[in-house]
Length: 204
Image 1: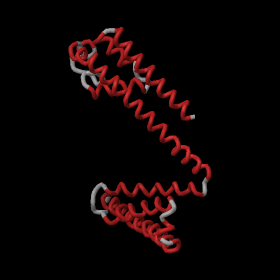
Image 2 (image 1 turned 90 degrees about the horizontal axis):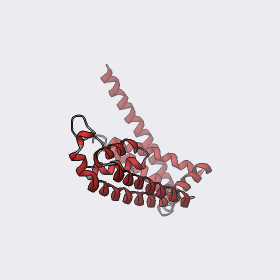
Image 3 (image 1 turned 180 degrees about the horizontal axis):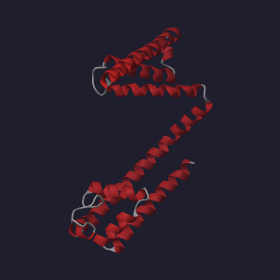
Image 4 (image 1 turned 90 degrees about the vertical axis):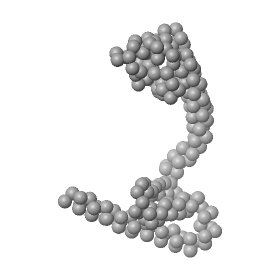
């Protein structure tokens, strides 16, 4: 019974999807006829709308292919068309667009910092985590957070930049000694936070 109900729901969803796709396609074709294709595609919003319609038609045409139903979610992007007549939303979109450049620079700088400290942590503490693992693990197996390899060292540095540093620094001090771990962890926090704060001020 539940299977039949689910099947009917799926059929109903497909029918509604076909109806709305037909409406959106008709709207696009009428605008192309009325404005002429050249002038239609001179407007960014029209190009945006045509891409969404094409994705919807592609999803309908390939409905039997698994995994393509995610294309249906792209129709939600049509909500951004409200920015034309909604000044607040339009202003918000412009602010987000203008800040993308600064955000990209921040991401690149932080990625370089995380990479450098991940390599430093792996080189300085990797062997200590392997040789002294019994100090931080009852069964003498590597815990989830360690610096024996680059991937886990990268995760620890990223975690420190997110503010979760006490447990990982304590484990580091247990296996490698207090002075060196304190120095590295403090450098990660200070330099990482300085980069984040400087980009916040410059973006303002």
